[in-house]
Amino acid sequence: GMSFSTAISGINAATADLGIVSNNIANASTTGFKASRAEFADVYATSLLGAGANAIGAGVSLSSVKQEFGQGNISFTDNSLDLAINGNGFFQLSAEGAIEYTRAGTFQVDREGFIVSNKGARLQGFQVSAAGEVTGQLGDIRLDTSLIDPNATGNIELTSNLDSRDVAPALAFGGPFDAFASPPTAPDPENFNATTSTTIFDSLGNPHVLSLYYVKTAIPGEWNVYSLVDGVSQTPSGGALGDPVTLQFTSDGQFDPASATQIDIAGYTPVDAAGVPNGAALQDFTVDLQETTQFGTNFAVSSIVQDGFSAGELGGLQIDESGIAFARYTNGESRALGQIALASFNNLNGLQPVGDSNWVETFASGSANLGEPGTAGLGAIQSAALEDSNVEITAELVNLIEAQRNFQANAQVIQANDAITQIVINLR
Image: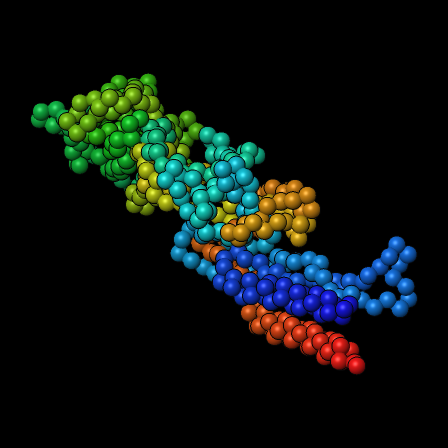
């Protein structure tokens, strides 16, 4: 009778092996899936005093189903919310407060703007402060779909060269000018040497055109700069309406130490297309001219940078390899929304699989150590990519043959036992 139960334990073991192999094969294309293997142990009928020297084994038992957490291949996709972990770690998900872990990074944005798994569990990450700095606080990562507030221009930085070969115009620049007067007045091209324009923004995000007119004076190395916004003369700090700021250059084409190097405009009133104040706040701004030179080459503006922008709406999402999610807005701005957290465990084999390619922590796994991608042995995040299953199909098919052979051999043992029992019963 003993050998019957031994053979049955062998059949059960082979059946378990077949089940595990078939599950691996079924999930060969499952994103983030980790293959399992059966681990068996022999069984002895022992008493308190031991099994004795000549103990015959009582079969086999399934001692463990081990998951193999090796890295799968990374496949690239077109969706920036497909994320793969290149290296160690798991994404942390919160499903109604229940915490689960996964390597399957098929994420999307739900209707409330949260980044969620395809089952609706929210991806967890480190939050950012109002200034865009990543904090250590963990929570859901959410896209801000509201309009980004406009920012009024406060500083314009100009890099340019004035042509030292220019001569002073025959007639004075004149002004003040007003494009909204009737008739409108504007600078005459005969009365200035060079001009440049840039767009600035008011507190409501409306664009305005700031124009600078450069006029060479009769004094060598001296230039007057006049400022107009939307064709209306401005008042520089310390001057009257329409006054210039005077720049003085030395014989090597650089600013004289005593020269002004910026234009300060205080209390500019933004107007609409009809020249009527548009309700935006009065505005102070500075035009920084420190990067201006006066060499014997043509007038050229190599760079104009200003710090204002219009209102913007969410235009896209980008996730870098350190896991920081950046929202891109239609006004050219981008800001951090959060940093994806990765979890590692002291004992990966202690994790409990719960389906949907997810695991939960257990006493055996130890608690999750959360960190930023690329630190403390954690992998990097690859956006627009997914980690394939690590199932090796060829090896699984060989295992399938082995399990089938084991099943057959154990069935053979039962057949032999049956024949022997039959012989005993047939003894007359």
